[in-house]
Image (cartoon, rainbow, N blue to C red):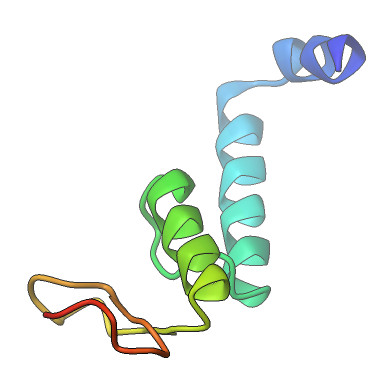
Amino acid sequence: MAEERDVLGAASVPKLLGRYAAILAELRDRGVVRTRNAPPGDYAEYLAAKDYDGTLELNSVKSYDLLAADAAWSR
């Protein structure tokens, strides 16, 4: 981990932003994140969907992000 940190410390800001964009694109391709926002929120939704065997709603749906398979949660 320290070695990675050294490599990142030597990289220019444009290179770091390029890596960040590439990482987000890869996470989107894998279905782990759904937006270009910081990944922790999308990743938490992804994990909850897996845990509850649920379905993630479209980003435009207001008030909730996930429908659990057992419908135990109300909207």
